Structures are given as C-alpha cells and as structure tokens.
Image 1 (cartoon, rainbow, N blue to C red):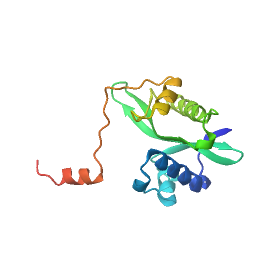
Image 2 (cartoon, rainbow, N blue to C red):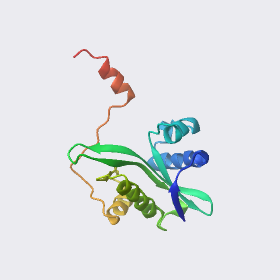
Image 3 (cartoon, rainbow, N blue to C red):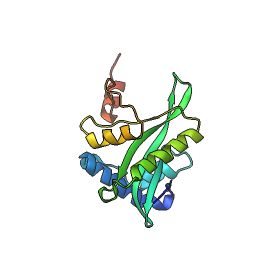
Image 4 (cartoon, rainbow, N blue to C red):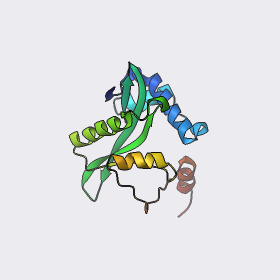
Length: 159
C-alpha cells in the first residue's frame, strides 16, 4: 500500500472513488462531479481542495479529500476532511487509518490545530473507526447548511 498526494493523471480514478462514496452514502443522484471540475478544484493554479490517495498494486483504492479551514478561537489553520472512502474489497486492512495518518502529517506540516469532519449518526462502523484513531465525536453539534437555492433565496430577500 502506498499513500500519496493525488496527481492530475489520477482524475479518472478520483472520480471513480467519489462515485463510490456517493453510492455508499446513498446519494448518487446528487453527484455532479466531473473530470473537468475535479481538475479545476484539485489541480488548478489556485486549488480549492486536495486529495490523498491510497494505491495498492498500482490501482487507486481509497481517497481522503480535504481543504483548509481556520479556527478563530485557536487563531490557527485547520483541515476539513470532506470525504474518506475506501472501496469495500480493500477495507479492514488499514488503508483508512493510513489515509488519516497521512492527513495528520499534512496538518502538522502546515501548523494546523485540528482536523474536522462529519460522520452520520447511523454510521456505526464509521463512528467506531474514527474513535479508534482518537477522534472525539461531538453529539451536541448540529450540521447546518445553506445550499445554492437557499443562498439565492436569502440574497433576494429584503431585510
């Protein structure tokens, strides 16, 4: 197994991993990612996100996508782990932990105070996995979102 930063020639495999994650999450119908917008987001002159990939026998089998965040309370940067996914046939052999460990190295190298992410309440395997690497799961915090339509609606309201 090899963990490394994704490269531009990985785009097809990155999209396949993202599709696998969308299927796993039960939201394949909402997937809009294409090779073109992955290239722009991850490999442009001003990337919005990055990816670590897991390679087994020259095949990409896992991914951790992430981007920068900032903690005003700590006055330090952090990393948001957006997606962590390993193809089912490659689970339980340490790939997920290896991806998280490499992400922690990225965080340490960049002076980050933390790595944050969301795990679904009903994802017992995910919760157990994250706790096994030392993560604290905050039950009292609720995820909030303004989607594209809600942003447009709000901006068009008179206050």
